[in-house]
Image (cartoon, rainbow, N blue to C red; front, side, top):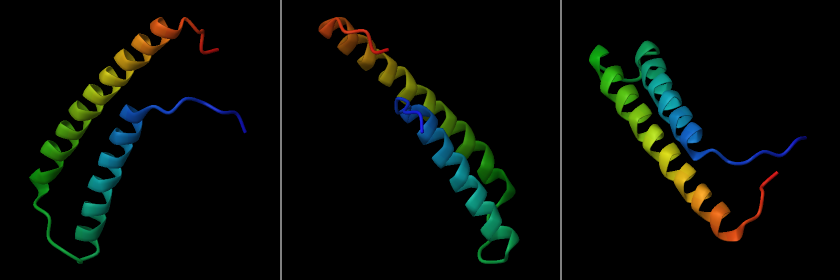
Length: 73
């Protein structure tokens, strides 16, 4: 299996979307009642936070790469 670098922004976005899916699956299954408008702030806020995490991760990696001088092939 090929190895790749961890991308926390994508991981966070996936976790938020899975959470929204689980909430609505539970609602469809009758386990609990979720208002229809919960998805908009959950998904929008989650994607905004994922973007911020990705931006922060990129800056940290760029700073570390410049400090060490190594090329992360």
